[in-house]
Image 1 (spheres, protein in one colour):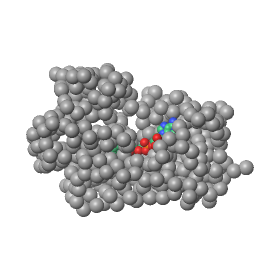
Image 2 (cartoon, protein in one colour):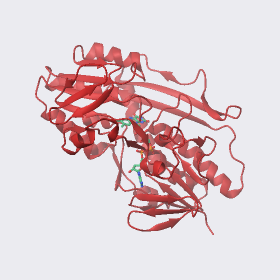
Image 3 (cartoon, helix red, strand yellow):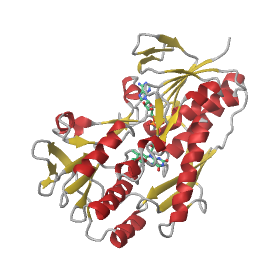
Image 4 (cartoon, helix red, strand yellow):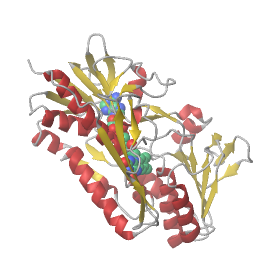
Amino acid sequence: QKAQILVIGGGYGGATAAKYLRLFSNNTAQVTLIEPNASFVSCPLSNLVVGGSRSLAEITSPYDTLSKRHGVKIIQDSVISIDPDKRIVKLSSGIALPYDKVVVSPGVSLLMDSIEGLASANKAGATLQAWKAGPETVALYKQLAAMRDGGTFAITIPEAPYRCPPAPYERACQVASYLKKYKPKSKVLILDANDDVTSKGALFKKAWADEYPGLIDYRPRNNVIAVDGKTKTLKIEVEEDVRADVLNVLPAMNAGLIAIKTGLANSNGRWVNVNYLNFESTAQKNIHVLGDSIQVAPAMPKSGHMANQQAKVAAAAIVAELNGWEINPTPVVNNACYSFVNATETIHVASVHQYSAVNKTFEPVHGAGGLSTKPSSLEGRYAWGWAHNIWADTLG
Ligand code: FAD
């Protein structure tokens, strides 16, 4: 009897896990990927679509290579429940699937109720998030394109941790790049609940000053607590209310809903604690959790690159366990994160993390990794190279 492994979510973590579970088991494990979307749309680079310099098609990839080349069975559906005792996953279509192991990589859930009025403002089309790439990404670009010259495009950032620390600041650059060209009397307002820019701070601030003087208004310690969709007004904890023409309101985030519903979020009720050697949930056996949903190790970002890396560690450990092999006692993962400051130039930060058997967590490797000195179009080309490589590694 072949081991049945289910993978929930075909994003950076799940799709990579599905592929590598097949590869590492010499195609002996039965791997089924459950994902509601027909194709993979990348969040990395999606800010270029918001800024209008790239199209959604350029960041969309098909799933079919996973089945044709690697023999992953793909079911286009959503998981509605996981029963850890009976080891059964239920899909919204009513199908029930038994498992030996389940890998859960559902991304984040957006806490719409954490900001008063946000859910209804979203319903009325007065606010958008575009924090899961797809139709909303294009809708946000359309709001930017329809904004009057002299208008304000507001981006609000929740307190860390949230999905992809540099992404809101990259988005501000992309919106500013569009406005500088087409609507120069306008501005980008960043209302950040945090004390400062949490990633690549000095580089972003220099790019804003050099490239977009007067165009980006950055306000740290501005925690948005309510939104009025009718008057397009944001209520901030300690400051005066703010009106804006486009409201890109990012609420606080938790682990993906299915992880929460299954009772896996045992880190403050928000994130999933895992054993970093195999990414098994500490709440339930045989459930391995990856990517944005987990309580990350110190200095590990919630990134697509990291989810891809975690997936390989988990896949290797799961295959080893099922075959009675020893697992790697000190896995190493790395992260590279590029941010575009305009349509072509990029800055990056990179890091390497190794598992410490003593402290039972991943720790940054000192002296490894790096940071750009300034934006460049050469790095912009590297960023596209990074994207095409990781899509090939995840899905190809
Ligand atoms: P995801 O990739 O979001 O995948 C989750 C999948 O699970 C989805 O396909 C979803 O449909 C599916 N799913 C959810 N619930 C269920 C269910 N119940 N049943 C079945 N399927 C389900 N990272 C980088 O490394 N580099 C970058 O440059 C970068 N830029 C970013 C820019 C933006 C604007 C944003 C928003 C993010 C960016 N990220 C970047 C972060 C990156 O997108 C995430 O960290 C990454 O997607 C996390 O992978 P994941 O597998 O946890 O979740």
